[in-house]
Length: 233
Image (tube, rainbow, N blue to C red; front, top):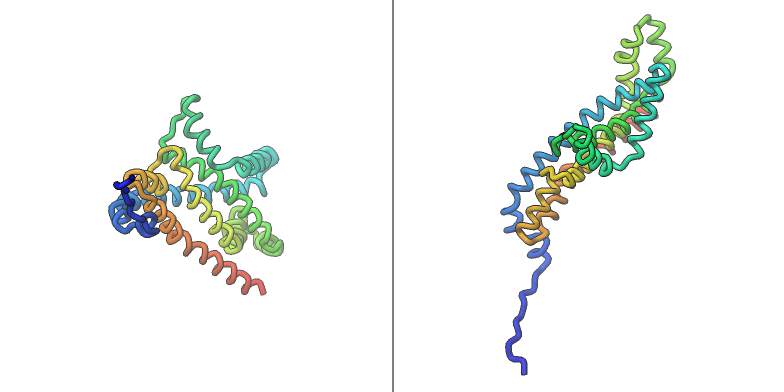
């Protein structure tokens, strides 16, 4: 006859996934990862923005060899998954004498891919500027540099704000891939916190942090698109 039966406590959803005590204990680790994620994301966005603009100008106005190089770069980098590129940069380049830190490898991979996508966005924006603007700037005797910097680019930048913002959101989300090279970003810290606490609350907390971080940018894209639609009428 069985007399000793151990009754296990029933874990509620709040104990398992929304444990306040675990959240408070692991919050410093999550905030440390958030700082790293923001630094990585902003760095990659800025470098991708600059690189994309340069690539777009090369593709549109450079001589044939440089134009073909720019086209090849854009096509190849848009075809490579960021995770694959990140692994190649961090694990393969040391064999040819180039060793990057986890942050350097992640920033390089994200920036290289972001630049390729940004280049196509900028190209579309520049080509959307009415031809009459180019002709008017040329008639005023402006140099090619002045025509581009004073007349064309200001109009193109207004056009590309929504897609560039969307690309920035994707870059910020892709920073989570940096955890594969042991960089202490938000996802990596949340994973470690989950292991230490033996509770998935840190991962749920990281997901909420990502939402709070990116939701305003998502809404901002909608606002920009509405404004551009009103101006286009």
